[in-house]
Length: 129
Image (cartoon, rainbow, N blue to C red; front, side):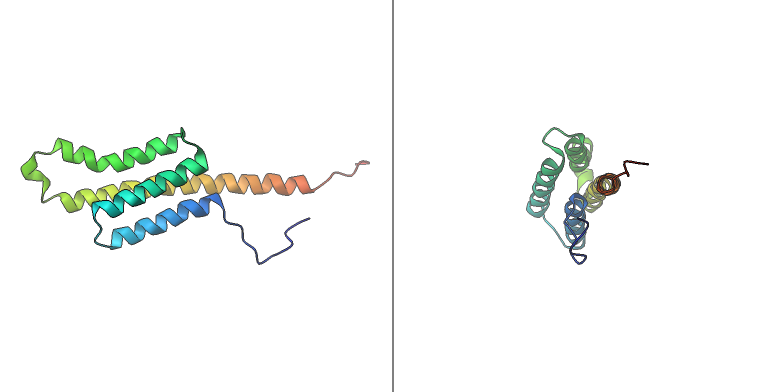
């Protein structure tokens, strides 16, 4: 039976990723500290693990987005770190955003394919045709 409740819109996997993007935008606008960012990262990794599995490459990709900030800290002399702290934070947030946007785009494409396949399953060829 096709969609019996036209007003019902199911929560999709891409919606979970979009929710994280919205939270990231709020964090970007706020004067956030490390604890808030760490909580966001933990939540995002939990969403990714639930959607893709614990060993999927997207978890590793997100880890690299997180570590982009750490790499800058390691490579800079201590005296050069302070003035660039805000730029590192913006770069780190941007890396997270780019990773999540790529995941959303791929997930939406997969969901569209699934919807197309599932719609095709509802049709039956006429036995005489």
